[in-house]
Image (cartoon, rainbow, N blue to C red; front, side, top):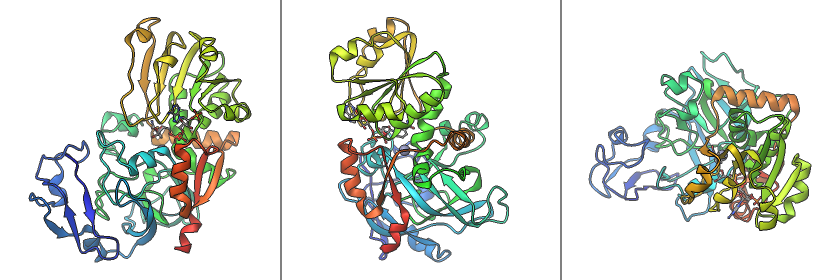
Length: 413
Ligand code: NAP
Ligand code: ZN
């Protein structure tokens, strides 16, 4: 059953309309199941209740401008959201740039509803860099005026084996930067970086090397770590032949890292026009994946392939390119399941795996690596007012290679 929270538009905030019964234990959302009562949602359909925004307004004036989507088919538009007052462990950041990830688009359009249903209004954005404006009394990592960054995670339970191992991205209770339940109750769910400011626990805030261009550094917080982590995990380096599939925001960072790690890098693209760029970004070779002759020449030759494609595609064509014991890792998260033929994996004991972002320590390691090697994303800087157009262009693969929103543009609203 589809459930949506249909909030009265910001400003009115008189009531929230719940479109479906949400008694205890009724939610199908993994992060929400069993926690329905925390949100005090009445069990009767289309009941009304005081809006959490209004409740919070009494104890906070920490509002900020933002762009949000009111529904899956609604363009992003200007709004005002509440942030919590910084607690003693919190860092408040004025957001300077926010990258535009394809995950933002998947979420806004509720394309991942089978796994993670979108709660509206939705404020996306998890590639955040900015400047610290305020810190809580117990904050030791940051001072006002510091550069700071926030990626896809703003909290986790910190006690599970994965958190203890620095793998917060695999914590069963991880809190994503947007569309996760907001335990601080500033809003029903967390709101991301398409906004003027954000308040985050210092443990989930990263340092940005001062030599990096900030617009190009923002995408490191998702596209960067999402490619860095599996390339490191699978030992990509000198002597390894590595394929990167899909030259988008993630893919182009994968090329930069794989090259920096010393691997032999081959880009697979559906866009022949990206050939020169791929070589400039660091690829040794470029294969246009729609050309069966070019693909056949690569059969059985790869130690590792990173698949960063956002839409349905034939993954078997890439499994066939792996050498004995080769691995293909999915980082792309298409809306629909991919069909995997058994024989491609059986022959040659090949493996297929997945990977999601990276832990906090590894994200800092990646940022430091980028500082040392002067690596940033290739970005097209846009004002927030162009965000809906940017989504359409991203769907056409018409971006070189990441949109980065100049958040100063929000001040014009
Ligand atoms: P993007 O910038 O839109 O890049 C996707 C690329 O995929 C395109 O540039 C295109 O490359 C290729 N592509 C698009 N449609 C295709 C099709 N129908 N067939 C074959 N290739 C196609 O997206 P992104 O931000 O890099 O994100 C890529 C995917 O990773 C998304 O699904 C996103 O949600 C997911 N993601 C996952 C994680 C994680 O932690 N695992 C983190 C962030 C994002 P060519 O033009 O070169 O073919
Ligand atoms: Zn992302």
